[in-house]
Image 1 (spheres, chains in turn cyan, red):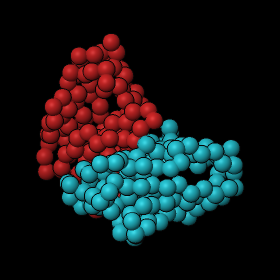
Image 2 (cartoon, rainbow over the protein chains, first blue to last red):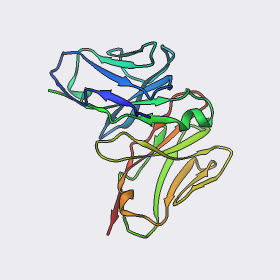
Image 3 (spheres, rainbow over the protein chains, first blue to last red):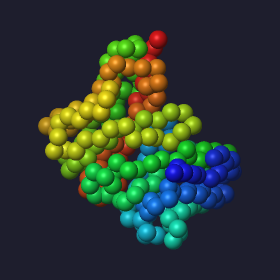
Image 4 (cartoon, chains in turn yellow, blue):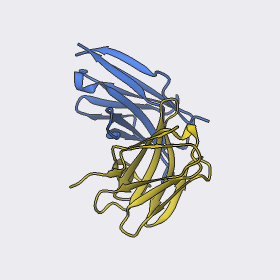
Length: 118
Length: 111
């Protein structure tokens, strides 16, 4: 079974630009979550989508947005990029969203997209 | 407000010895806790979990202990192996809410 794929793997943008990252979940998984990883802050939750609906949202500004398509693929968009947005963006898919043990256990991460803002 | 804290950024342990990674949390509503392991250039992979109704869960060389009164959990790796060198993330969740991760602890296994 193919794992979670993220494209592109690496990206360099300049301040003020916008960027779109893509995530293809494991086949059959309907939940997709996005995380930002930085050296100082660890893994921070951005948002979670299930069946094209945003279920949970982290504490990030409105410049960060996402969506999920009917095939469960998800995109994340960051507008008006700032230097502090440089990070590894991770996507994770799950067979089903919480609650319960199984839903949380079955979260599989992709390799991430390394975004550098200059 | 950091709800899940891993206060040790790094830890070095001799191969064959026990590695103990610690995690503290502030939200008493958390009912499920997980540990993830991350190698460079890869996404985190699930390692082991524990429900708040238990105080211990074992899986091979990995054991997670939960002390609810102290709001503390720990991951024990016995014996430590070179392949265990990675960043370990502690995470917690409450029902169907989002999963909150700690900042991670980098574990170095020394030969």
